[in-house]
Image (tube, rainbow, N blue to C red; front, side):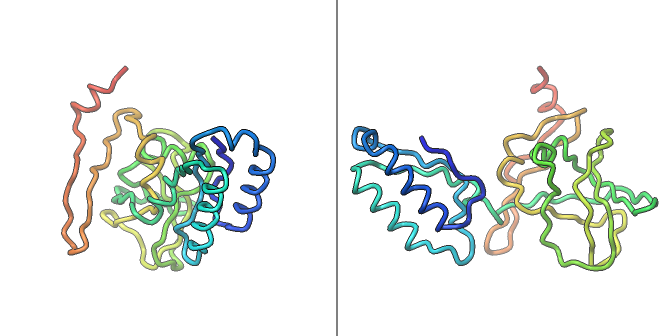
Length: 206
């Protein structure tokens, strides 16, 4: 396995690195049946040269007679899922802070690990808020954002790209309720796939 990409949306850099792998490990590549090129390949990005990407992989596969595997998790789920939250309270301070019914610690733990704010694709405006989670942690902050309209209790705040590590790293920190999983169909209908209850919290306690 050659797991050498992370958020790589540049075909040229991928191509150059694959050529270096081919040159350095040529003897080994002729002896194996398959090769994994790992994840982090953002080939679903708008404008990505997909035909050249496919040809590069095909040429590599045929040259060494190997099956080529990819781990395109992020590429597959990008722009496919949102964490939908509701504002529970507005705290007036040096900067207005909106408390939502979710938690970075419980639901988007990867943000704390990478120390990055949650992505938001909503239309920007002049009304700035810090969006904070509902847990007791001082660092439970999604980020600072500007909204087209002023937020109030009951306002909906959505965070983009919540399908990847959000799904697998979530936890029941202090019993904060898990968000339901829903699928919105092309016809506009929304189906609730799974809901989490207090019994799920009890069952998952170590």
